[in-house]
Length: 77
Image (cartoon, rainbow, N blue to C red; front, side):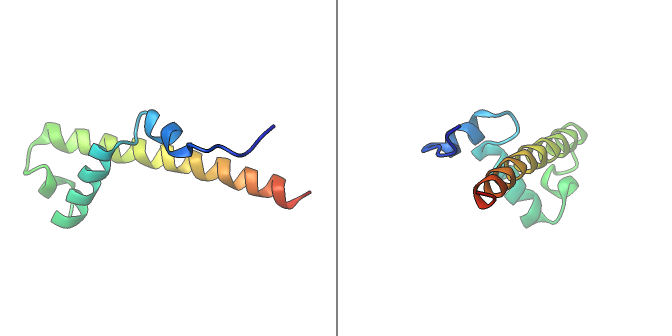
């Protein structure tokens, strides 16, 4: 099995939960100090932002687990 993937970012961005738009939303949440402030009180947007953050966390967690396994395999040779 080859661990070299020349376009890893394409795989990450092709998954649901990670996009430039969602990263922008995350920045807005941080800049404004919370989900409700970034959503400007709109409960639909608050729910959407919360879901997007949860999905992004899962994508990043899965990618980190995959890289951890690759490093473990490489270092155990």
